[in-house]
Length: 196
Image 1: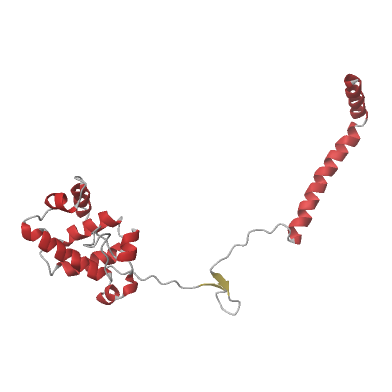
Image 2 (image 1 turned 120 degrees about the vertical axis):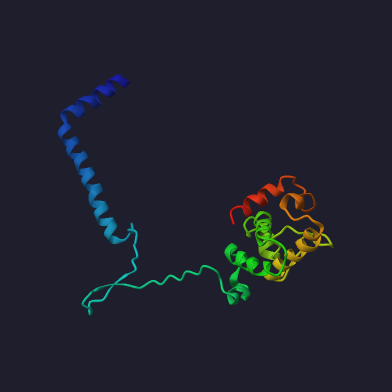
């Protein structure tokens, strides 16, 4: 039965091959026409591109590109450092440390490197929420907290000065056993210091 059915279809296709071919072409044309009608009707929307170039037909030069100004600041000013909105930009923190470091007998690069290592380049949750860049614990338990970056940095300089430097612990390797549990801590701090 199946063989007879296949044979009948094969004979029909052979006798009507021209009709089938025309139907195939017509179906492709119908698909193309449908696409040409659907796209302009907005059913399929093309991607819209935006440009900063404007057209001014009242000018000698009809194409206008708005000027863009770029301000480059090598080091933030003291006013920017004092402004609480300067955020936790590592470069602003570095400038603040360089300024405060002049008042102490502690290398600012050491303070910066400890903060960089302990806070993940000044981006940890503890750094953002509590200005605790140095992984310092509070006496009452938990982590210490400061009101602003300058207070935290100034406290770190004083802390290193009185607890370490005044006792002869003035290198990352000497500070390591007291400051951090990880015996390789000083290698990471020294690596950051060597980039400054």
